[in-house]
Length: 392
Image (cartoon, rainbow, N blue to C red; front, top):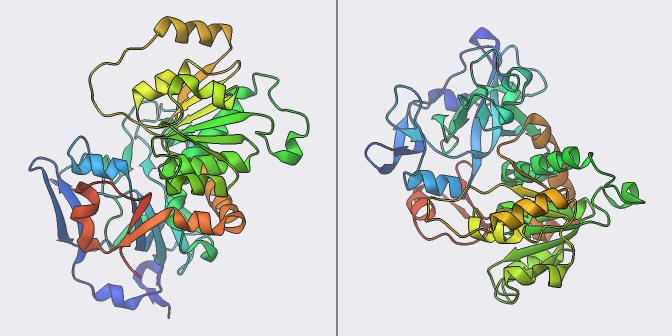
């Protein structure tokens, strides 16, 4: 049933209008506390806003680091931050200026919001993921509450409609956007070269190139699936032994698994051959710089992980610099994602579900209620992608 509310707001769920309080998972940085709290439910306050019933929220390394109080900033004037940025929900109310999104739509909401500076060319052109000032906000991370709560209100332009067919796996869209942005940047950078191989249009833009993914976590595995779908001869390098179930997952979508227990870093090119693309998804700097030393001619290395603060590591800077110059190499970091990356992630996830349905579903290794938050966010990491189910 849909109701027409005051101010031109359309509602698909009259029950929620009677909710006095709602649950949220929040950190209190000053007190070093992680708590399940009761908060006031949000209301639509401007015509372009929509209200979402949160269904699923993915748990990732960023959430765990915030819960270890390594970073995470509450909104101005608040002493707590509602965490969670990998969202998946259902629209239940829309403001009068909302277009293209209606009650009942499933949506994934972007994370970063633009800085307030009119002289930032990225934020003023809709590309807050390339913000120049650093004064952006990020839901669940930096100065904006996140999605580990029952209801969320946001500008509809930050929402991305997801097909009903992705009800069980739609929570994977946000982590997949990391790979989608990296791929988009790879194509842009490599346009400087005669890089496309013959028949690449028929076989994918990565045809005849080798891609190595560092790490078999959710970001690494989703990145490997995206690279494989683009035609790359894709390898995943991880510390788990070759008998681990992740090896079978990798092989199920046509990629190859290489275990660090069988092949030390310096032997990788002997096992794989020329490294054209390396997609890093571990946050392990020593491993990453060891692999950079083996990057091939015209190769490109993408950093997506953020290492914790550790002691210094030995790096052969002369070799790395020499290779970058003499081999025309490129290295860049990639963080957050744009509207286009969300669109591409949704499209690719649809394809993953069609081509590799069991593999895609198996990336989600656990679903838990909100009361399990302490174990998931502060206990030992386990599985691939764990999900908090907020609403059924």
